[in-house]
Amino acid sequence: MTYHKDFVYLGARFNLDIVENLEPKPGISPSPAHLAQVVTTMRSTGAKVIVVQPYQNRKTAETVARQTSGTVVDLSQQPGAVPNTDTYFALMDNVVKTLAKALQEAK
Image (cartoon, rainbow, N blue to C red; front, top):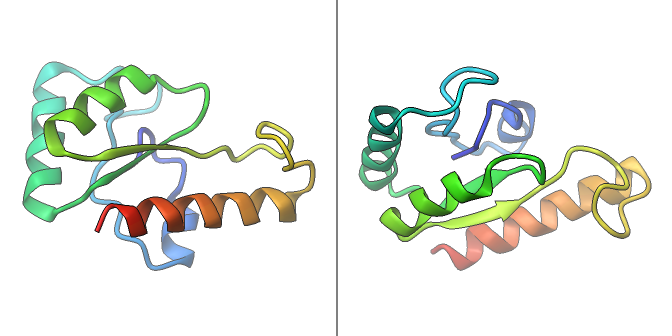
């Protein structure tokens, strides 16, 4: 699960199934009906991880996570946005390690 369709290539590269997005369209906040659909999808698929970037609405993601026993994970796609990620390679290393840890803990 992602907040927005911004991790499509990461999902494809690592064969991760992104089952839904909290934001239905870029820049459009999710409606209560859409969030209810997201909760249903997470429960039916067993998805447990919601990926958000630092500038996205973590409160919405946390609300969905509480309703689904999920976990919210902060990932950035910008080098330097997170400590020790000044290069692209350091950033990707951080993304992979952070996501792998969250997926392992979600089992």
